[in-house]
Image (cartoon, rainbow, N blue to C red; front, side, top):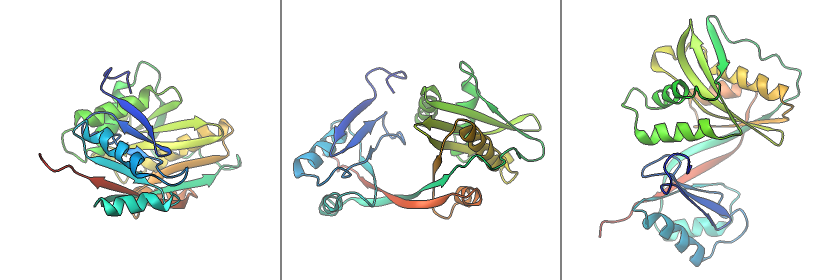
Length: 245
C-alpha cells in the first residue's frame, strides 16, 4: 500500500485481526479477522475505533461467523449496522479437469509487468457500473496489480478488451479475486473465460484449493457455482459512522 502514497496507508494488528486504512472511502479501508484468536476486550475494541476515528473515517469491518461471540456483543452495544453480505467459496482442484474452453471469440492473457494500466483501468470501470471511476477504486486495483504474489488477466472479445481478474497463488491455495466485466460485454461468457484461465493456471501451479468471494444470489455466484465452488460461510460487513462534533 505504501507504494502508492507514502504516509497515506496504515495497518494495525488489533484483536487478532487487522485494521487497514488505504485512504478515505476506499473499499480496502476496513478491519478483517477480528475475534478469531479469542475474546475481544473493551480496550481492544476502543483501539479499533480510535484507529479509524483519528483518520476521520467510519469503522467498517468484515466479520466471520466463527469469530468469538464478544465481537458481536461489542457491535450490538455500540450500535453498528449491517451493510453487506458476501459468501466465501471454495473448491478442490485435482488436476484432471479441462479448463481450456474460453468461448467463441474470447481470449484471456496474462498481463506482463510494466503493462498494468489497461488492466486496472478495465477492472475499475467494470466495478463502477457505468458511473465515473473514483480514484479510490483505481488505487485499489493498482495495489492488486502490484502485489508480488498476484497475477492479472485481461479478457478480450474479438480483440477488444472486455474484462479482467486477479489470481493469487500461495501455499497451494489459489485466490480468485478482483474480477469484473465492462458493461457492453456482459452475458457473453467473459467471466467464465476468466474463471477457466485462472483455474487452469492454478492447476498447473499444483494448487489443491481454489477460493473466491461472491455476493449471495449474484450472477457472479451463479458462474462460480457452475465451476464447482461451494459456500464455506457468509461473512457480514458492519459499519459505524461518527456523528459530527
